[in-house]
Image (cartoon, rainbow, N blue to C red; front, side):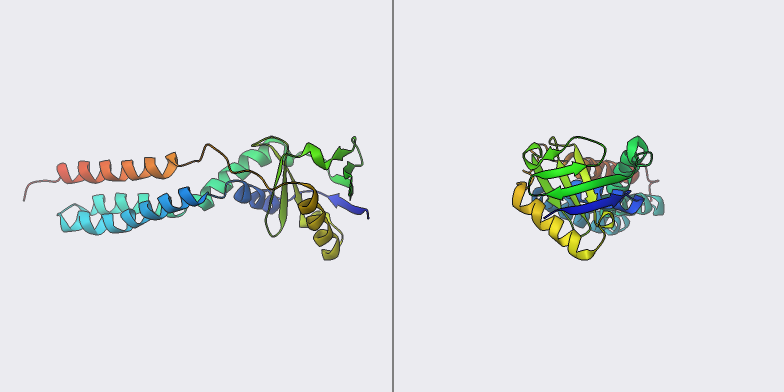
Length: 193
């Protein structure tokens, strides 16, 4: 069975692909939740200790920054990916079958060339290396049936992406350290009562 695809990836497809690529592991998710709990409790604690309104706002801002981290990380990464190539990339066209992808303007790519796959609702990421992927979005296919057939075809021929050994746990840890240092500095610098 041959499944035709044709079209361009949109900005929304790029954001969805990056959101799926940067989806946190359970370890990072737990660390973010702990840090978020500290960020929610910190403004009240700083206010109770007699911290200034500025101290409370700074801590609350850092907590909000952490809470929105999955959103802004995906958009920053999508912007970089978009500016590097997808915005100027020609339309994708070709066929997918049990042997692999056959782009109209390049040599056929067998399924074995892909090291892993990560799927979301509207996008499938086919990994060539640990961090380099090709995105195939729902909008490239003529019908919902074609998209479902393609997603099933990929799942049967490409193994799921192995979790990364290097997890991005430094971002929540860094924000937590900055929040604690900011709270300590703002409490230490407050005028005596």
